[in-house]
Image (tube, rainbow, N blue to C red; front, side):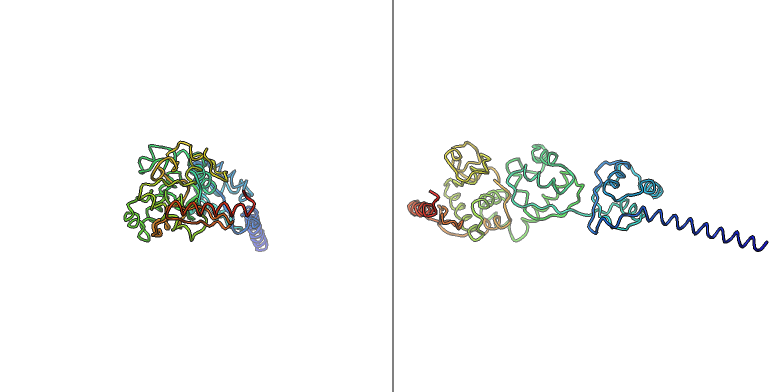
Length: 344
């Protein structure tokens, strides 16, 4: 009798061990593959159903045993309506329980939105949509929504001045409105720094006007050392009511961004952005202005220059003049330099 009891106990122990081993094997087969690497992320779309989330996880190779995942997800109350969206970092070798707990917790991995010097709102929308869930069309729709723009104190022409080139960490699933809330906050903080607001006020300009002038400077030169000189020159023209006659403004007005040389077709194009035709600043930026260009305007050089032209020697440098006669001499030098290089 004792032998039978002992045998039964051994059989039961072996059965339990076998079941546990089988359970562990199945869970092991269901764990996140180690082959996904250490920097792997999945994106759960907004308003996704549980079945859609499972499909995403299977497609990304995170879930290998769907039945096991579904069973554990149900038991851990992960299933919701809708499911929690976002971008999540997944660790290789996670158990199904760890995976479900992480997704259920909603701890997202942020993305980095990189803004540089995009020319138009359409380009900004296209650029930003590469990093976050909303597509370029939904972003563009907000950028051109006059009711929304009126609420935040901007219009289609000057909205570009909100965007400060930088790298921003945001959540992948933020809405277009939330994205703009972040940009407006960053814009506000930017102008509070380094006495920028006070400097703009001292110049008699708003931040939007400073940004607009900075966008022109941005497109006039790629030489950092010239920016404050060019900014000072344009500020001189504004003070005396002289037209800016800035080539980049007519390039923007005509949207002829591929042009190599401004012609009469550009300067005669009727647009409020045409500073050959209209005095003062254009109604808004002609591109996203870099921080260095903004600061170049705020800290512009004090001089008497009102004219400038390219040197023409291939250096990208410019020659500056205080009057038209001096400017004509610089233009002649420019032409000679082009001829010497076989470009005329």
